[in-house]
Image (cartoon, rainbow, N blue to C red; front, side):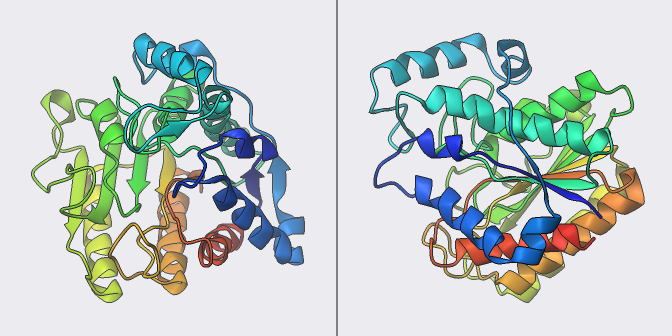
Length: 313
């Protein structure tokens, strides 16, 4: 297996100050990967590219781009109570979404079997009409639409989101679309308040959103059982041509922004299962993009576990 790592120190230029989504998240991620010399040498290192206006508009209204750009001009500033930006943030957000698109190119064109995008800012809270929840553009959603538009062989995309927070933005973008299945496990009730089991899509997309709300302090074994039940339900009705992962590591037992109980061994299990799904359905094509995860003491090791498992698929 060849695993691509899409990364760039330019991601450090999205400055948020003393904020959970801070530049040190990227630093501990890359340091942890580099500390394993064998793993680091085996990764195919690729640089991101910036998404175009047209690519952003695949998922977001024009006014979202205009607002972000305008607020960044007067930075440091905030788009909302949670979402801080610096002067470079809009440009770096384009590199985050573009990193996901570059990963799609790599796995579809045969450069790599799968990929991990060590990007920031994260993306899964960004809706069609609003940047929010630390997120400017929806990286995974843009990558899904890019893959469908750019590659005729990519008709159906599965997005699996195991961040502790529900990806309301990703759900919003694809809620009426049967070509993209959005599957999320998340603490509930919790920020941003969406993600009830009754939210299952609408119109042609009804049945192509699956939310698995997980109560706070659910045991890891029960979480994994819920994950398997949901995954089985998804795969019975949907065979993807590409698997995208919103890889949030804030369901970790030590994370300050959630109350779930996962450990690195549980993330190893999740990664291996998603690799199995990708291999059985779409030739192993899987792209994982960093979302949450805010404990700087544990995050690097957890991401290393995830990436090493991708590389061992």
